[in-house]
Image (cartoon, rainbow, N blue to C red; front, side, top):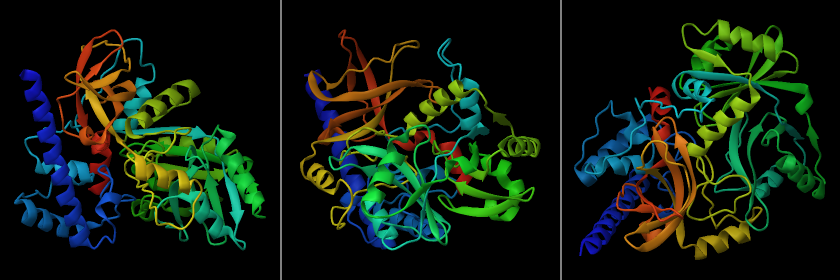
Length: 456
């Protein structure tokens, strides 16, 4: 009898959330004239920036719409409500306690987190590091824009001078070859594939050559200084005070320092509202020293240990991103970081991997959802099945310790009827038979501090 009650409680919560999600999406569409269907709005779609692209005027209209539809008043200072569709639903379903990252204590696990100082800087102040960039340049030429349109999966091509787009490169089978940024200059495009992994760059070059287009690798001409964290804008501000402050996400601008040209690109690797500064090779040490000295009281950590930096960025990016390079696209998951929108529109005429994506959208039975695991400190992050009572409803895809939450955090692939945030009725059943309760949650839980800083 108790098991039946638990199953019924889980079903009731999911049904209530499903209906609330539907109503919120309808408010978004009708009040803000979004021009899209509800099924094309992912539950974790960010409301601002490169998510649904709302602005402050839209926010006011949305507040009114939510109040009329649900009778819920949103206070002006409650900014985290607007992180995503899911967090807005969390607020409406006030009985559902959302896991909050704002003000959370960053917890160390003895012997497992040598990268913790870099992680703390990234999450609470500013992490700075120097990186060798990967840059492919495509000069404006006949067929260039059409090539980019075909190359990138997604609903919109939103390229215009001094603006970028974040896109997935898919092969014919729907596998994610790379996640790239594409920057549009006045007379050229830059592709920024994943540094240190030549697969994406090589694939772009091969596809361009097959269409008679010339792509040039200019990586050796440039260096890169990256500042990430909620206060990274204060570190970069001395390079161009007013312009940097007003630089929108996924936009870039030209500046000058010590007579050298800079390209300041607002795009964090881990969704921390960071800046990537491209400058002539050989000047990166001097620029990093200058930015550190001009920080103006903001704590900044210049991380030079490559191994620690890699581990830090890996943990932080896994907390807010799924799936990864090499994964096959799933209709139930958004493979781009949460403040960015990647939603395949099957009506788009052509893009690489389109057939595989359309087939997946027609047949998918599972969705991917984030979760926090309730387990004793020191529990090993072993994957397992996700169960509701004795019924297997999915499987974990990965599980890792989150210093920000002070808990094990992961993603699970669940049957669609169970794949909603805000449910605490599920458990992970490990291979040894041990069970641990989990709570499904919306993935922007890690972005609260940075997002609040950004919106303020």
